[in-house]
Image (cartoon, rainbow, N blue to C red; front, side, top):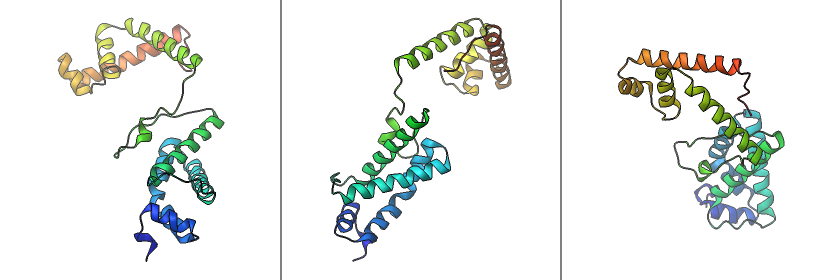
Length: 194
């Protein structure tokens, strides 16, 4: 029987009985998805390759010590290992990215990758409050476009239709709003990064 015809659980079982080729099939079967997931999070090819290798080293160690008991959930188990190793990488480097969902639904896409501490939350809230105060000082047409674009997530076409102006006018108002915000930030010597 060819090992490539076996499902993940059967491959794990044959690997645990000593068939090394079963592990090769498992790695080959899932490598693209696991690597793509890691690379999407770390956004660096070399780091992604390192985390990918570490993921399968951990898989092998866990299998060899008979601690694998995921009952038919091999791929989610590997993805969880990869996810945890990515978190470890960012903890070591003190930075954490955000991620957005891809074409396929993945439970890890719904997880918050960064647990904000109280100080970070206070800083973020203060920055948001400062930005809101600045936005209130903008001319009304610029404020309206900026709010529609960034807070209501409207396209420039939707903004143009709603405000009954051309797309170019909406774009121009947005441009001037951002220029004016930058000037106000500089004039007030504000720091808007955490």
